[in-house]
Length: 80
Ligand SMILES: [Zn+2]
Image (cartoon, rainbow, N blue to C red; front, side):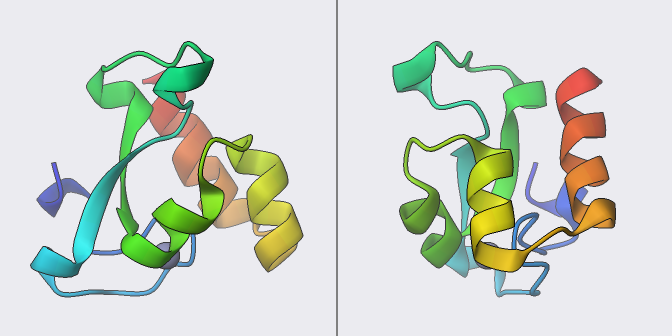
């Protein structure tokens, strides 16, 4: 799973050591997100914690501004 994203955080786009990355539920389980690989992405601990249970797109735009390539990567993944 983590290899799939090339050890890069899907949100901030930074590359991390394998062990520094976490698996994040794009749609939080607390909001009905499912434990499926299409709902799980590779994220750094900082982004994972900061995002919490917020809507990923709103959170990303608040934090990083509009990043079409990263947003597409995530939405493609969700739709896979
Ligand atoms: Zn990150």
